[in-house]
Structures are given as structure tokens and as C-alpha cells.
Image (tube, rainbow, N blue to C red):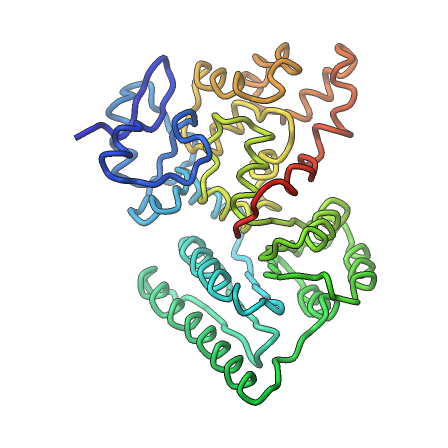
Length: 387
């Protein structure tokens, strides 16, 4: 049997022969060039075996890993990400999704619950604007993760089954489900107080007449508002996605996430082919990109620091491994003279390091206006956005 990992020249990568032997399909854009992802206890043991004393966990990394993490290629250390804040509320609003996208939305919610079930939370609410009521999920103190996961899946599947039945019933009677403007949906979504993670799962807005009102509503949010709002798009309509993208850039505590293929291409354009952006990172970014700084950094056009890379991977990156990542970065030459400081500085972010060095090199003076923005949207138009 082929070893899972190869450790050569101080760099840990997944063995292509092992993937071929097991007939595994990787979600990575460049699986043979990317740094390795460790997702399960079995993979952790194999990585330790090939790396020996060179293997070191990132501080406080939770190694209570599960086999089912392998499917989404969730990174080692993501459980620690889930423990960064006190018990929050999670609220998902399903907004006027086209019938052909319902299965994608249902699968996405199951993926989210399969991650959130490992996090202490106060409650999870899933509301469908097209149906009365909502799905309210709370885990009892004496309830196991598997028990919660089983009945949560049944509740969510049942709600989608009811929605499909209602659509069929309405079609047979030549009527349709009520439709709500995005402004109406946002008014409901933004009414919660306290530490709340709110998500809008939305579709095509091209015919929505309330966008001006919705923009005013969003821009009236206070910077001190503790509630985060993440928009998750299920449409290929560029006009709709462009509007949400602009809102996420100008409104505090707001993020916008597109389909996996578009986001994976975006991160590759920003960070290069050595960073292992998997479907697992994409799911985690949807849930926590506002709270976890590292997920935001992946969409910036400058390199992440060695400290950030280690935190994202859940294991300590050596200088050789960081240099490997850095050399594949699209703007490696622009930031070459900061390469060692990016790795060695454990206190500052890459942006802070660049800002501190602005006066030393004229090439850095545009960072706040160019590299610090999420990568420009031109490439998105050329990407097949398969949600």
C-alpha cells in the first residue's frame, strides 16, 4: 500500500500514487502541488510517521478528528476554530430559491450541520420564507453528537420534502409560492440582538425591485453591531453576485460567498497553487470568514504570514514549507524582501508588516488600494460558477 504522504525537502504533500490507489477525488485545484491537508486521526498518524520529529501541531490544535472529515478535506485544527467564541446563535434564512437549486441548498445545510455539530452553540434556526414556521435545533446536554446529527438531518430533510410538496401542489392549481423581496428578508434577518451568526441563502436578484432599499438597510448597520451577516449565493447571475460582492466590501460584519469553483479559483489567483484550498476550507469560510481572520486573508492578494499558514493548516509550518508556499505566490517577487519577516514575525499580520515597511519601498505604497482588496471580479466572469 502506498503511503498517504510524501515528506521531501522539508515539505509535506499528499502522495498522488496513494490517491490513485484509493481512487480518491481531491477537491483541490492543484492537488499535486499543494501542501498536504490532514483531516482525520488516521491521516494524522500517517503524517507523523513520515515526518517524525519534524511534525509539530499548531498550539491548542484539537486532534479529536473523525473519519467523516476526510470527505470534505476539512483541515486539521478547524475544531479549534469552532471554539474561538462563546456559544452563539446560528440563523439560516432560505430566500426564494429556484426549484432546481433546492437540492443544492439542502445538501449545503447538511454540510453546515455536520461541521457545527462539533461546536457548542445556543441554538440553530433554519427559516424558509416560502413556508410558515422554522426548524429549530438545540442539542441537549446529555445528547451525543451522533444523536443530534441524526435527528437534525431528519428535520431538515422533512422541511425540504414539505417545500417540494407545496411547490407541486401549487403548480397543479396554477398558483405559486409567495415571493418576498430581499429587503423584506433582510429586515427579518437583521432584527436579532446579541452574538448571532446570520446567513442568507439566496438566488437570482435580477428582478428584485427592492435593492435600493436593501442597500440603505445594510449601510445603516453600525460598525459595533455584533451580529455577522454572510450571503451565500446559489446563482450564476453576475448582476446579482456583483451587487452582493459590493455590499460585502462596504458594509461592516458582512461577507459574500459564491460557489466552490469560483471561490477556489479566486483563492488560487490570490494565494497560488501551493495553498491547499479544499471544499472543507470553502465550507468553513462560509460559516466563519467574518470571525476567523485567516479565512479572510486567503482572498487578499498578498501572502499570508508563516503564523497564519500554520494556524490554517493546524500544524507548524517549517521555513522550508513556508518558502515553498511563498515561491508559488503570484506576487512573490513584489514581496520578496519581506519573505523572512513574514515567516518570523509571530505578532503582526501580513498587512501590518507591509504597512510598517511602506516607507522603505515604493512598491508597497499601493497595498491598501490594490492587494488588500479581495481579488478583482474580472476573473469571476470567466469561471464556471458551479455552486
